[in-house]
Image (cartoon, rainbow, N blue to C red):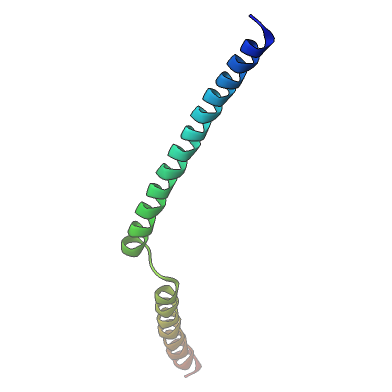
Length: 77
């Protein structure tokens, strides 16, 4: 075999390996995109939004504050 044939075979092998790697990367990216879409759908149904959580915490703090005020007023009597 002459050098040109060896060079052509090397290029074909590198192209084949590079194409296979590129296909694997693209498949992985597409799978990740699907996973991200699924997580986005689940977030709306399973997780609490930050402002809803903050509102609930504020209500709990308000209730606890009133309880502590009542306890302090009874202790001071």
